[in-house]
Structures are given as C-alpha cells and as structure tokens.
Image (cartoon, rainbow, N blue to C red; front, top):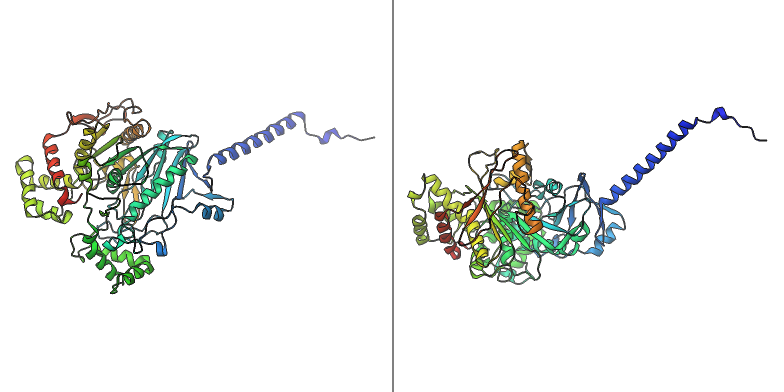
Length: 551
C-alpha cells in the first residue's frame, strides 16, 4: 500500500503560481521567437536577420546587390549578384544584417584631408522596413558627395519609417572617385574597362531592388528615386539615361550637382596623371591598366587625391560621369530641352543660398567649375548678373556660381517636366543648418542636417550628429511627411501633416514653389511663393550655356 506524505507537496496556491509562471515563460518564449522571426526575411536565395531599431522598424544593413568588383573587376561594370554563390556560402544559416557595412573607398572632401578609407567590396544596400508590411511603396536614396565621397551610414532612415510605417526605404552604396568614374576613350572597348561604373552600380542596385524588394515588404512597381547634390545629379541622370528597363516610377531631386559631364578624351590627361602618381606610368595602355588593377587601394587613393589638388594642372580634375555615347548621349540639360526624359512625377528644389565661390569675381570662379566657358561666355555672364540686381558683389558672385552649379536645377527640371503636363512640385529650402560656420546662410546640404538627425558629413566616411530642439524635430517631421507622401501617393499633399500648407504644383504659367522653413512645434513656417522672375530669366540663360558648361 502506497504511503503519501502530503506535507512534502506544495500548497495548491503555490502549484497555481508555478503553473502561471510556466505559462508566462512559455508565452514569452513564443513571443520572442515570433518577434525574432519577424526580423528575418527570405529572399529566396538567403535569409537575412535585421536589427530592430524601433518597435515597428527593422534595418537590414549591408545586403549585397552585385558581385564584389575586385581584382580584374576593378574599373569594370558591376556583375549581377551570384545568388547561388550567396546561398552556398550561407549554407542554410540566417545571415546577420544588423550592422552597417564598410563604405566605398573615399576621396578627399577637398578640405585638405586625405581620402582612402573604405573598401572596394561595397556594392550593398541598407533597407529600412516596417516590421509588418507588404506591397509598400519604396524610396531609393542615392547619397551625395560630389561623386567622390559619401557614406549612407550618415543618412539613416529608421526614424522616417518609424514616422510613416507604410514605406520601405533603400540606401545605395556605389563606387566613388577613380574607382567609380575612371574614364579614357579606350574604355569604348570593354576589354579595357567600362565608363561610368559608379553609375552602373546604381542601375544594378535598382535592378536588384526590382527583383527582391518584395521580400522586405516593398512593391517593385512603385519605386521613387531620391538624392541630394551628387545624389540629386544621379537622379537627374537616371531621368535622361538610356537604361534597358523601367526601374522607377517617381523622382525627387535635391540640389542637383550640375558639374560638367566631360567627354572621355577630356579625361585623358587626368588618367595619365593618376596612373603616373599610382606608380603605373608605363608606355602601353594595357600595362598601365594592369598595373592599376594590381595596385593597392592606398596607392590609388593617394593618386586620386593628388589629381584633385593643385598638383594636377588640367582643366578636368575630378572623376565624374562622362558622356559615353551609350548611357549618356547628350548633356542632361539638352536632353531635358528636347524632351528626352522619363515621364514620371517629380519633386525638385534647392536651398536658398547655395554657392561655390572659388575666385575673386565671376570669371575666376566659373572657369574652374566649367572649363568649357570662353571669354564671350564670361562677358555674357557679367551681363546676365548685373551688379544692380544684388545687394553686394559678394551676393552677386554667390548667386552666379550657385545658380549654375545647383540652384537652377529647380527651374530647368521643373520647367521641362511641367511643359509636358507632368505633375511637378518645386521647393526652396530656407532653413539654415544651425551648426554651420555661418548659420545665417542656407547653404548647400542644409536640409540634410534637418532630415537626418543633425548629421554633418566629416572626413573619410565619418559624420557627427547633433541634438535637435523640439522646433527642429517638428520641422524635420514636416519635411519627412511631404517626402513620404510623394512616395506613397505621387503627391506631397496626400499624407502631409495637418499643420503644413498645401504644396501647389508648379506650372509654366504660374511658377509656384513652396518655401520650406521652421516655425514652432504646432505651426508650420512653410508657405507658397511665386518664383522670382529675375531668377527664372537667369536660369534660362544658364540653360542656354549647357553645351559649354557640359551639364
């Protein structure tokens, strides 16, 4: 007969509490497993685990979109990602995508710094997605930096998705400076190399996005491309480029960097200097190219920095996109004037005071920027920018350089698009970066500080982030709402903040543009204005110089 020892059993209340604890732990384990599952996406060839950056936002960082452009692939077009190779390497395991990848090799910012940080194995994207979502519109961001430097890490989008958890945002890494834009006429023979490989990187990224963004919750049929400075210029170039498939359906151009697109022959002296400085000054072209492909990154970084300095006396001293006769057959402004551009909704604008004063007057400042301008062109410029129009010679010079290089993108693009009946919205950004050397001037890239948590670009892929006041945060949210409303609805007004004014469309008959500026946490400081007619006339003049400015 069994003997029971009831005194050794816990009381019924304790049993109940233990049961509750076990159930709670089981539920917690299931919840954590479920949350963890929601951080993992399956592209069909590999699974990636992202980083939960907000309770509703996941960042998948450093996802490759092309094969590494190493060794013999240096200075050549990107190769589509070998998904079978990636799958074999993963071997069924979930790939960690919770940390930012190494950025592309940097060039000098031109402020006396040395470039060279970064890696060539950088053809990757960062993807920011709501934790739950499918078939969402996609924003693809192309960073600026003069095609010479830049790092997507410095432009985070977690807070954009957190503010509007109904979009997917992708940020592209692409090759820069000589690694992305080395050019000589002999690259017409692809056994030597390829033109515009940094731009081809962007195209390859867009193709990868088209094929795989559904895994991250995105709709590949609703893709808006966006960029600032060289990123804005890249967007403009995509609008006029001869691309072999449809890759986007909307465009946002911020302060397009309207630097010259030289012809490959005009880059020859730059190439020869670069090869010599890299220790590759051989007689034959094949020997030079092989030496450059075998050279270490440090040697090439020093050579490209030297080319951008006063050591190189040639007129075209930057590694930029070129008119290659294939993807680009004419200068962008000419393409726009001829109607040779993608017919998609457009947002375009610039800051109020962008300028590039390199000399003591208009000719000495414009000639280094646009080597194709001659004495007659300079005379024309002086007439188009009379002293009587400006408060000072300093303002006159800042306007002449700033409009040719950045500000006139607003009038040139908006006029071309609206002339074809395409929905177009223009803006003038009018809020200074409060941490700049001159916080009374709304300089180039001022909106980046506001949109990206007080970000200021530093040397070699670095950045500093500043704290923002409640008023600045409120203005940032207003900007993000306009931008993402355009992405979601092809109209900046549909999902704007209630306090924000209606942003009227631009038309040739009534050139309305919004002035974006800060006010209080509850009231918008933005308002609608008509474009200044004198500026419109000056930008028409600037557009007439496109053949000489090569932009």
